[in-house]
Image 1 (cartoon, rainbow, N blue to C red):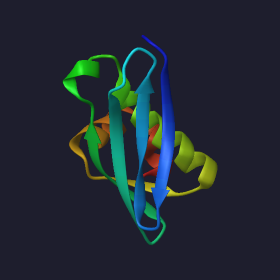
Image 2 (cartoon, rainbow, N blue to C red; image 1 turned 90 degrees about the vertical axis):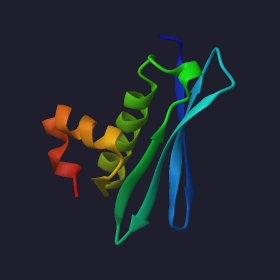
Image 3 (cartoon, helix red, strand yellow; image 1 turned 30 degrees about the horizontal axis):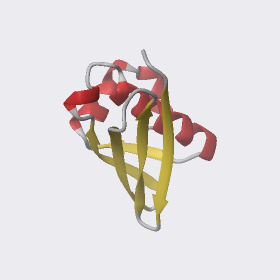
Image 4 (spheres, helix red, strand yellow; image 1 turned 60 degrees about the horizontal axis):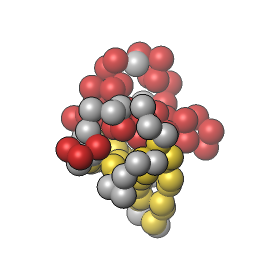
Length: 96
């Protein structure tokens, strides 16, 4: 896989993680809304031009790592994030 860099962009009510691929100007996104200290993962978008490279998985992994580091819980709402949490029972400790 080509190098992927994940960046985090926050707003007062939520934010997004962006996936930047070394060989493309197109980015993938995972957005969330924050309420009561819980990050509600509500949308994952990886355009087809950069699809099938594990970008969505990397976005969720970045959110999980961030949750562990900054001690917040994740409420999976987006179908991709829901499926990722099902595949990774070791993430239960950070699931809201």
